[in-house]
Image (tube, rainbow, N blue to C red; front, side, top):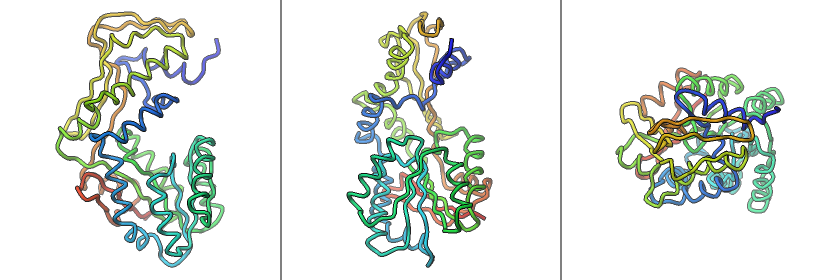
Length: 315
C-alpha cells in the first residue's frame, strides 16, 4: 500500500506513546477559516499585539534596517503578509531602497500575496519564492551581496522544542551574511490566566480548530473518530513558559483508520499531544540569540508589552 505523507505521519503519531499529531496538519480549508476566526478573538492577543508594534514603531524599523544601502526583506512563511504590508507601505512611502521577497512552501499563497501587494503597493519590487526556507536563503546568499533582513513573525518560534529552535535558527544564521538581520517575533511571559485563555477561548473556536484535525483524518483516511468522545485540554506551565494543547479521550475506545487498515486503541483519559506554544522572557530571547550566532540589536514592544519583535544581527 502506498501511503501519503499525511497518512504516514498520522499513523506514526497515533501509534506513538504518548500519542501525538502534528500541528502542521491543522491547516486544511476548514482549519484555515477557523484560524482566521481565532486571530479575531478577544482572547487571542498575539496578532493584534504584533500588528500594534508594526503600526506604532515603523519609523524605528526603518532606522534600524536602512543603513544607507539597498536591502531585501525576506519573509519566511509569509502567509497573507497582513502585518508586513504596514512596513512595506511605510518604507516605500519614505523612498527606502529595498525589495520584498516573501517565501512560502505554497505557491498558491504566494500568488495571492503577490497579486494583493501589487494592487496595494504597485511600485514595490517583489520577488516571491516558493520552497524550503534554507534553500531559498542559501540561493539568495550566493546570488548577490544585497543586505538581507529575514522576517520570522507571529511567535512561530514558540512552536519549536528548544533543541529544534536552536537548530532552526542556527540554520538561518548559516544562510545569512555577517551583518544581516533577523526580525523574529516572541510572545512574552505574562499572567498565566491570560495566556491560557488565548488557547481556550470562551466561544470554543480553538477547540473546534483542534478537533477539525480529527475530522480531517476521518475524511482523508476513512476514519471513525467520534468527536464527542474527545475534549480539548490546553495547559500552561509558568516555569517552562510552555502552553501545550491536548485532545483527551473521554472513554476507552478503538478508532479505525480504514484507508490504511489501522486500528488505534485509546485508554480513558489518554491524551493526544497537539501543539506547544512557548512564551519567552527577555533573558531567554538573548540567550537564544547568543547560542545561534546572533546578537540582539533591539527589542520592540507593543503598547501593553505582551509581545516582542526582536531584531538580531548575524555576528
